[in-house]
Image 1 (spheres, rainbow, N blue to C red):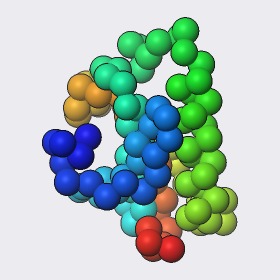
Image 2 (image 1 turned 30 degrees about the vertical axis):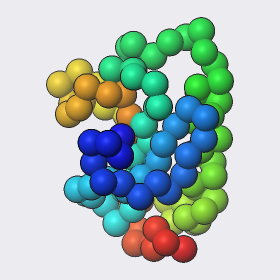
Image 3 (image 1 turned 90 degrees about the vertical axis):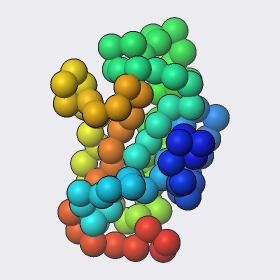
Length: 102
């Protein structure tokens, strides 16, 4: 993704890349993108459970890193006409301010 947008990687594992949303709508607004091209949730391959295990592991690391159990958070994926780019992705957001560089 950093080939298309200048991003600072916040977290990365074998299947996912996490960075700050370039146009955040929340005090904390992170994007989680799979490294493989998956256009939408409906295109997500069911035969690769390690992709989803790594997604949950990444989210757990981020929840802990940003103290989101205390601050509150939402994990969102969009689909259909609500999906603005043709790459499946998740938004981890918190309405409570905090520092991404903590």
